[in-house]
Length: 624
Image (cartoon, rainbow, N blue to C red):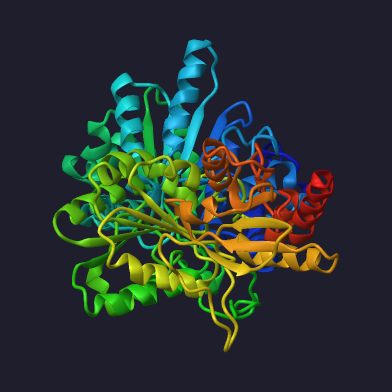
C-alpha cells in the first residue's frame, strides 16, 4: 500500500503518474472508511485528492506556506504530512482535529474553521516574507463558496493593488456547503461553460493527432498561458481577476495531476499575484457523495454501501422545528422571511423552503451582509429571521449592534448550535454569543430549556417588535411523548424544582443538567431550587429580588463565564447589595477542543455530578 509509505510530502515526489493515481484511490478509500465511522466532511475532501497531491509535489511545505479555506478540505493534506497513522482518530476526543491545527503539525501554518479568511492570511504571510527578506511561496486553496464572502475581495483588492507575490488556487466545485448563489457563481459558471473554452479544448486535443508535429505543438499550446488564453476566452471573460491585479490561469481539470502540476509550476514562476482556477467534482470517487454532495458535506457516521446514516435522529432537529414553526406563522403573516448564510440545510431552513421557497434568502457565506440586509428588510416592513450557527454569528457583531440594535429593528437572530458543539472543535463552539449580545442596549435574549419552549419563543417573537436573539443547542432535549415542556413566559423565570438549601439559576440547555444535579443532591438530603431562566436579557429582577438573603446562589450556562449570564446575575446582586455566596458554572478562560459533547462538558465542569459536588462543597463551607 503506497499510502502507508508516505511520511511527508517529499515521499510523493519520486512517484510515477501511475503510482500517484493508485495513491489517489487509496486515499479516497481511507477517506470514506474513516468518515463513515467518525463523521466529518467527506464530499469536499474527495474532490481535492489530486489537487492536494499536486500542490505538495510542486511546493516545498512546510517551508512554503499552504492555507486551506475552509479548513474542512484538509483531510488529504493531513494524511500525506505525517499523520496517516493517526487518521483513524479524526474528530475524536484527543485525536486529530477536523480542521488545520497549528499545534498539531508544522504543516498546518494557519487555522481556518470559518470561510473567506485564507486570502487575507496568505497575504499577511507573503508580506511577512517580504519584510523579512525570505524566499518561500504562499498558497491559499480557496473554495468557490468562500468567494461569496466579502473579506475575500478586500484581500484580493489589496494584494492585486500592491502586486504582492502569492497564489490563490480557486477550487471550483460549484458548491460550498450548499449550492452556491449570487453573481460570482454565475461568473464562474460562465468561465466553465464558455463556448470559446469548449471549442478551444477540442481544437487543441485534435492537434495531438497530427503526425510528427502534433504532439510537440500540443504541449507548447497546452503549456502556454497567453496562447491558451487567447484561444479560450474573451478579455471580458477573464477580466475580473486581472482587473484586480492577478494573473489568471485556467480553468484546469482538478483531477488531472499532470495538468495541475504543469500549471502550478508556471504560476510559481510568476513574480506577481495569480489565481489558478481549478475545476473539481465534490464527492469524486464515491458514488453516494457524488449523487448527494450537500448531504455528504458534513455527515454523521454512515454505511459505506448505501450512504445511509448509522444513527437516525429520534426527533426533528431544533432547526427543523424552528423552520416548521416559521412556516406555520408565515401562512398568516406575509412579512416573515428567513435568511441564511450558505447554511439552509444546516439550520433546518430547507424545511421552511419546502413550503415558501420564495421567502428563504441564502446570501452565501456573508453573515455581515445578511445582518444588515435583515435590518433593511425590517426597516421596510418585513419580519426577518436570520438563522445562523452561534459560532458564525460572531462575524456580524458590528452589524448586529449598529444596523439592528441601534435602530431597534425587529430582526430575530436564531442562533443554532449554541454552546459546546462537539467534534468540529473550537472554531464551531457557540460560546461567545451571550458575551457579544448581553451588553447591547435594547436587545432581548432568549434561551429555551427544551425544543418545545423553542417553538413557543419563535411564535412569541412574531408579535415582538424589537431586536431579539434566540440561542439553542444542538443537544437541546425534546419533551417525551405525553410530557409537558416548559411553557415560555416572556420576561419571567420559572421555578421547575423547589428547594431551600440553595438556588440554581440555569439557562437553556443547562436546565436539564441542573435538574439532574438537584436530584443527586436530594439523595443526600440537600434541597436545591432549580430556576429556568429562559429570558437571559432582561434579567427577571422580580425573582432575583425575592431570593432569600444568605441562601447560596449558583448559575449554570453552556457559555464562557466571562461576559455571560452568570456575570450579569452577579453584577445585579452585587449592585443590589445582596448578601450571600454566588458561584457560576460555565466555560473557563480557555478554548474548548474537539470531541464527544458529553466528554467536553465534563472537561468544562458542567456535568450534573460535577455541579452537585461543587454545590455540596459550598454548602458545607457556609454552614456555621
